[in-house]
Amino acid sequence: MDKEAGLKQIEDAEWLLDPHGSLNLYVFDQEGRKVHSWLAPRPPYCDRGHIQLFVDGYLGIDVADSFPRFFFSFEEADKHTRNFLRWRIWQTSATPHPFFPPWAHEGTIAEPLKGPTLDTATPNLYG
Image (cartoon, rainbow, N blue to C red; front, side, top):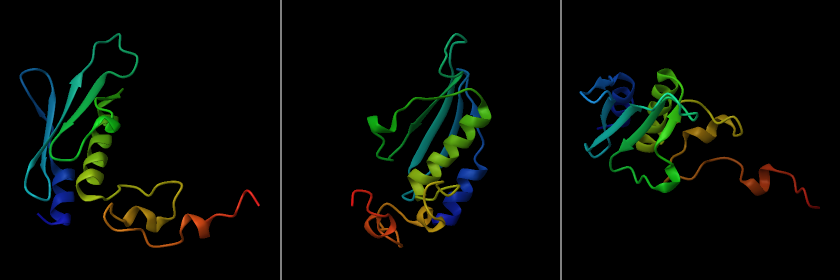
């Protein structure tokens, strides 16, 4: 699957309700392997959010990714899930990072970013 088709499938995929009350989203990575994301309700007394997100697939997810993630609304969870999948599968950000110039969000993990380095872009703060 090419990048354009991959990004489109992430945008177009629909959440499917299962018999257990979870919403499930299925997309495919570059190799055609299924990536499954699901949203499950949390008990009403939970103060970290009412919805929890899980993602499963060949994405190199580890403890640093911190799943489940918690949200207070479906809109938040949906937007975050699709942004996470865009980045993790295709290294494409939905929006530029607020601390970096516009070209910074167009790189990939395997391809170094073009532009000034930290050494040349920032003044020497320590003399």
